[in-house]
Image (cartoon, rainbow, N blue to C red; front, side, top):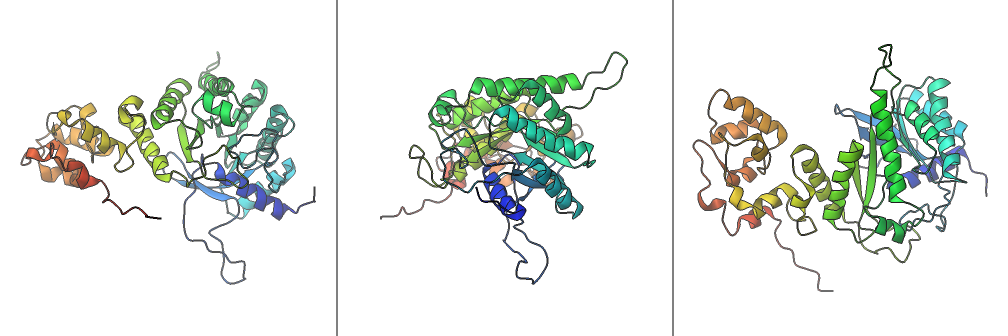
Length: 408
């Protein structure tokens, strides 16, 4: 293998990391100052943005330790049979890049993933060495998100959680059938076992010792995972059921959905079509409803797939019109959360305002509700939707206008 410069490795391994959606990047116009005119670059190699629970935007150096891999997952650009440029950072190189980028105020943290080299334990050991070196030798206090290897030993997983803020383990596909077809080396049972280990260690770290002292923190920012959408035949209901299970049983902070996009030198068994970005967007909306609005997976995709034309909450309301209109002044919290156009904050404000007086239509707009959407599904003082709730053309009011299909 040709010896590569650090810059060349960074270019290859940052590009290889872009398929990992579990730390969201922001979009924007591409600008750079490589011609010597101006300062800065919006497309800086390897830098992405993630958002903290309090809303802060964090810039992360997002790279792979290596894109060599002994596994041959059909959907992965870094699979063993892929004919792509390969590179590998040493432990010292990743530490150097992180520290130097941080000192220049380019980043606030590190997102580190890797292909699997030699064995899961060897790969995980090198990744742990990177984070431990950053913490112990460089006194690095920035955010670290470590993508862990499910088959690695529990001891390495334990040490990873000691140094990293967040751990994530990708389930990749929602069913074992899908993994058997596209990633035969991966086992959903082993992945879940690793997730369970992380959960148990996190819970144990919150307990106090017999002397009343707090134990060392373990992955304080929680764990997350990612599922690929559209590579196998799993429908939205299956994906959402899997997400519900992961949230309930493994206390995940987030499940990320990644629309499968054709990759260079792709396998013939993968679909050759554009990424299902609208489907990915609807899954994120449905995921939000599962976590914060009290919906269940089976309610949102009862016929298998989410409606792509309208958001999942509106789609549910249109299919269950008998439950509407909802009286804003008397309905319980659970039902208010199901009204399209009314979010969790608006529901809290409605419940708070109701303690003092009855609410009118005009009050809801001031509270922050989207009345263009909500008015067909509510009753308030001074407002009744009349026959609007049951109107035959109600869905057409919200769905995008039909488009002429291409003839060729």
